[in-house]
Length: 341
Image (tube, rainbow, N blue to C red; front, side, top):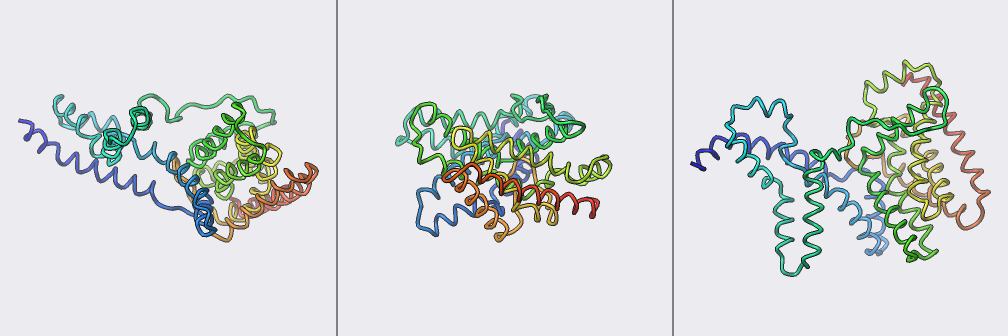
């Protein structure tokens, strides 16, 4: 009897497997992201410890989308229209999780005798969070934010929109892991002062690629709406920059917020050209993909120089960072208006 059910469900399972494999392949692609460039650079510099830390941060963030329920790929309305009996739907519900290779990996890890019971339970719990997050309403969709932002006119709404876009990138969660871990260690009194600047640079490295892809998640419809807004181009960029700076400073509060602020200004100024001239479409819930290695290297060096100068020498060195950012904002606004987005 079970064999007959499985034979009827075989086309469905095959389609689910194909859709899941396509999604996981897109997640595991190595985009032109500053985090990957940094990991390769640390490996070349024979510093495997830092390289492994960067890889672990990226791996933890990727673990959740890789653990999603395969049935999530099917719209609920379409799933209800399929000519399946209730018991076949229940059997499909039981079989579908095992289409995900992560299910087998987590099960094997939890049953491995060399792994402690607590660690196995933790990995299984993290897997369940990723698997059940759409059902628990943890996907962050369909809910607008009501942050009180002191900006006039449409800028407050634009900033909220760009904050929501940042939250829908995996870069945000990589930086969240670094900033959150630093805050926990700082509260516990376990974070030495010598770690403030490296931690700040690592958090900024995680989020910096988003400065190269300011318009990547807007799509054609978003660009059309920008054309219709009665505001100059520099204000559109200002809203995106403010959202990026707010996130950057928030993630470096437990480390060196002034250095984080300087690094954010430098990252935006250095990435202004590719953000305006080389706009590439990006996918939500993925690591963002920058434009080129040369652009990424320029941005990373600018961030390191700005953050180090402010942290090690004087906060007054924020002035040239603000000047460079202001010039890039003026140039970018003019380019937007010339190209009409």
